[in-house]
Structures are given as structure tokens and as C-alpha cells.
Image 1 (cartoon, rainbow, N blue to C red):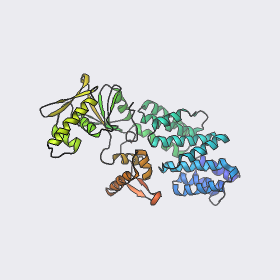
Image 2: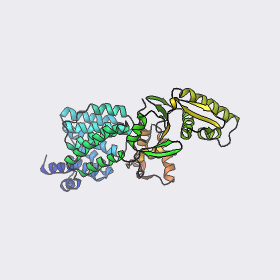
Image 3: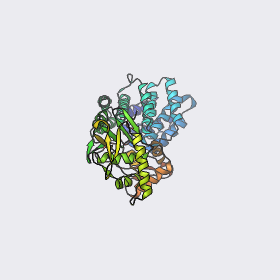
Image 4: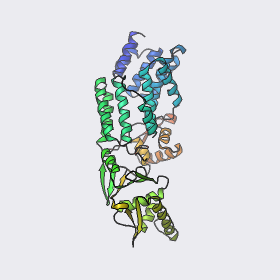
Length: 406
């Protein structure tokens, strides 16, 4: 490898893409194309970066499998940053195995980190945690060590282990400082803000209060009866009843919990559960049936008693009733939650992360765009959607599978 390639590589490792381009901008050999692609990615021109990396991968010969694998890993990272979550997973896995076989542990570990980050984005937290635990960060240099600790912190926040998240963020900050890469330090600072901004709302006796992540953790560990609107479960002291697939029952229990200790009229319950403005006999009959189903579903945690005006929630052993709600609610809030990370998402990536069809996501995006709440860039398959982050809120409780339910 010649001196210019070596110097450009060192500049990229130090977070100086312009310095790297000054050395290889006019060259079209495979190593230079690869370095130019990485430099353009660091500068934010992801489409150009992807094109250069693909050209580099094709330009490397069959004897340069390791160099080609590094290009594939870099391209996979660009796809992840672009929220193109449908890119073939096997391509990254094959590249990682090539790097492991050649003894390139640093880039192989980076490929594993990318696999884990993708799992976190699509909500497969348990699998991401299992794979991360299998990695030994001891031999890592400061930059990959910071990336590793950021993953540890991200998973800990989604598991509501705020103490572990703080410890990991502190280690990430130290590693980023040692690496001397400003962009990496900024990423650590951005992740740390999730612990100091409201992550949810607590609704008790009709009054709302914003909660930080550690306060959410404390609430779920308390003896209160929590109607969790983030994951549509009712929980108390380790007992969890999921109503995620029974939306009518959850709408009823949430309405009862928000008004507790007062009762809720039948008309309000009909409106909340069925959207009925004018109730008839069939609506009232259905309400009685669904309230009976709700009583059976949550009988270990609370009862539902009839009153003169309607119904009231009666927790076992006189516990406090609390509703844990998302900081931002409303139609298409799940799509907005993912877009609130400040990155640009493809509609296919959003569909994969939300576990729904791309057609459903596209309808939501069109509706939000009509309201001016999201915007798109690009066309066709390169089209991406974005929105400014919601001011003053963290999205940790809005992302897929953020709360433990078992």
C-alpha cells in the first residue's frame, strides 16, 4: 500500500475526511475508491459514498477478498445509517466471516456491531443482547470501544436499566475522548440526553406528569397497578397481563385507570372503546360483554365494579393506579417515533421496524406529509423520510420493544 493510501486511511481513522480526500480525490484505483467512499460517508453524502464503495468492491481482485469484505461492511453501515433495513443480512455476515478468517478482528467486530445495531432498530432486543454479550471489547481500540459501549447503553435503556446505561455511557465518553474524534463524542452526548429528557407521561387521578427513564424504571418496580399504554399491558409486582391483541379491552381499562378512583360513565366507555357517539342497545350489550372479558383478564390485579353512573376500577389490596403513556400520542405516532431519531428512513425500513406492511406505512407517511409533519427526499427506491426530533422528548419508549413484559 502506497504512502498516500496509508495517510488517507489514518486521516479517516482520526475523523478527518477532508484530509483523506486531499490525498486520494483524483485517484480511481480500488483502495482509493474505497477510501473516497468512506470519506464521503463521513461527510454525509451517503448516495455518493455507496456508489464509490460498490465500484471499489468490484475493482478489487479475487485475491483481495479481505479488501472487498471491508467495502461490503462499509456499505452495510451506510445502509444502516440510511435506515435501509431490508439490505441482505447474509452479505454482511459473509463479509464478517471473511474478515474473521483473515484475522482482521477490528473490522470483523465492527461488522458484528452493525448486525447488532440492526437488531436493535427492528426491535429484536433479546437477540441483540445475546450477540453483544458474546463480544469481548477488551482488545478494542478507543473508537470501536466507544461504539460497543453505545450499544450496551442503548440496549440497557430499552430494558429500562438506567444504572447500567449510565455506566456504559460514561465508558463510551472516555473512549471517545481517547479516540479524539469529535463526531463520535457528539454521538455519545446525543445518546446521553435520552436519560435527561422526558421519556413518558404518568397519569394519576386525572393529572399528568412527565417522567425520565429512571423514573419509569422506578414506577414499574413499585407496587402500583400500572396500565402501560406504551406496550398495552397491565402490570403490578411482576404480574403482567398483555392486552396488546385486545385493543377494546385495553381502551376500557385505560379509561377506567385514567379516571380512578372515580367511576367512568357508560357513555364515556362506549366512546373510548367503540367510538360510539350515539349508543344503542347493541352497543350497551357489547360493552357488558367486553367488561366481563376485561374482569376475567385482569382478575389477579383488579376488579371492575358497577356504579350508578357506570363502572370503576378497583385494584387488589388498595394499590395506586397509574397510567404510563407515551410522551406523544395520536394517529401514526409509531411512525413519528421512529422518524424522531433525526435519521432518514425508507418506507421499507419503517415497515420492518414496526412489523407492518409497507403499504400501511406509506399511507401513514402520505397522511403525515399532508399535515406537514414529515418530509421526503429523493425518488423511487432512494426516497427517504425524515422529521425533526420532537423537542424535549426522548424516543426510547416509542421504539419497538423498549419495555420488558416478561
